[in-house]
Image 1 (cartoon, helix red, strand yellow):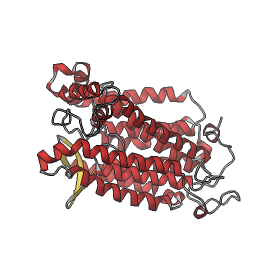
Image 2: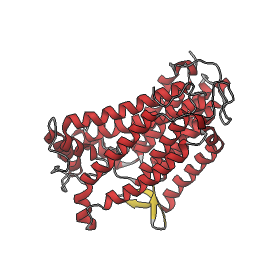
Image 3: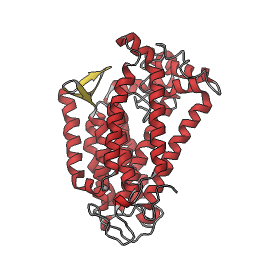
Length: 391
């Protein structure tokens, strides 16, 4: 079964990456509509994220900055920029980005290296670069850069797909950025490595090779964990959070989840966000959602994310070429891995990794590049055969 067949579409070659679609059944993108279902889902998550963020961060903003809307205003600014970027990218031909895929990846390497040299630290983690009054996380830029880079590399080497050399090459190509990002941000490094594995899997008709790839990935993560004492400490805290002072956040997050019950205390009525859950607007925001909206509200949010993943799969399946299909598969992998990791951390299913919940947690750089990725997916959807925008 070939790569195209695995995605649920005929294996007949479409337009090559980096070129405009020239098949008779591919209309000009201006005559097609984007996937309105995905667009509605994205806008719903953005609105929900802003409302939840204001509810969660108001106390911290008032205490630390004498402004209950401090975090909301900054997030709103980044969201507006992201929506503009999403709109612009969605109207562009996604094949154009293949021309800049390699340069984008090299730029992500340079920026991630710059963080190690001149980066700013926050809460003990050096992850930010400052440009005057603005700061951003290069690791967030690395995610779409890797997606575009690997989609371009894999789609431009069709004849070598399925070979162990190609599979190994895909993993080797991302190891430099994984190593640079993983130095101070192991969770993002895991996401980037996961994106690479998903793209290799989607494009590869052989399954047995992924057993070796999985074992290699486990070994790679084990090495990273053993390199820093604080990472080993996180494993101990995960096993018994009550025995460690640093387990306070985990315990308070679990209290928030448990106190929410089935339908929650009500929006804005959380008690744990009042200083009990440190930095509640960041990684632990899902626990506040559970407390205020209950189990039903949390499940509804996860269902919306599931709908988003379904739309990515539909768009990838109907993409006119492998490059477009891999872009959507990479974005789908990114969102899926990040949501799973965040929820698993908040529920103490896995050790704390400091990962945010897409579109919901506070983080201007994150929401900006997430919306840019959504623009890419919407751009691919405009090229789909028989696309009416709703199906």
